[in-house]
Image (cartoon, rainbow, N blue to C red; front, side, top):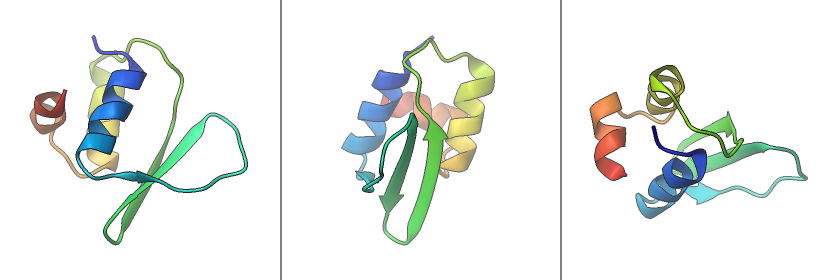
Length: 68
């Protein structure tokens, strides 16, 4: 199970940019005209969390895992 920081780094490598925010644990990312956010806590992400992140950011689960 990957940690959240590894998934976050993979999204940044794939072209997602962090949008400015005031604080808190949510990360709002933007790529092209698409923006998405997730509650970033550096924990091990199980299949359920990975599926949700993949869906929110427009990837398949296998596609998101391939970025890692």
